[in-house]
Image 1 (cartoon, helix red, strand yellow):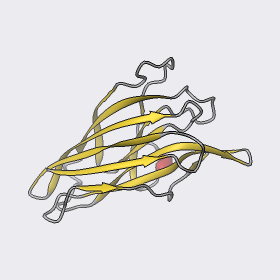
Image 2 (tube, helix red, strand yellow):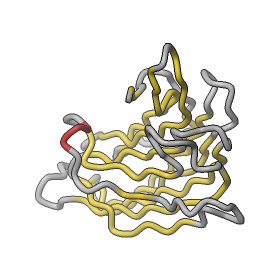
Image 3 (cartoon, helix red, strand yellow):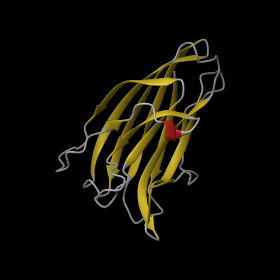
Image 4 (cartoon, one colour):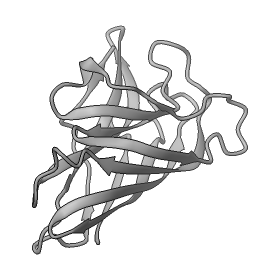
Amino acid sequence: MVTKQFSVESITAKQNTSAKGSIFVWGDKEVPQQIRIVASFEIDPEDFGGVTIYIPKKWYIANILSSYPEDQKTSLHPYASETDMNLGNEWRNKVEVGVTNLQDPAGGGSGTIIIDLVPDDKAILPSETFNIMVSVGSDTKDGVRSIGVNSIKIPISVNAESKNQLLMPSNDTILRM
């Protein structure tokens, strides 16, 4: 089993939105067979961008469990997109928590999410590397609203060189609305 830890927080906007967690990858003979993403998060009450977890091509969501909204007034629950043509070549779909895009913020809150993924067995290659991305936060500049203002890409592979790692965020992906 390969385990990757991640942590990302919204630092470009004046918000306290963050997500941290672990990604567990089970495989056999260097071929990944199952992924479990476990993340705890805190969403700022003024954040309309929340937390988004991007699922790579060749992987399917088998199950989602979430405690969000945990003791909060919002009725906004985690949402998994079906295939989304706007996600580009790297992502199959995404799981959004507290994302309201062009609407008012959902009110924030904290919670935990568990996402189980299974591969397209016909498409996964031995020792193949792919990414899972977690983005957080939102910002408005010159009237343009952006979500996912801070993100982290977590490289995943099942091979002899894979080690447990703590990964830190980058600002390389911003989605503009």
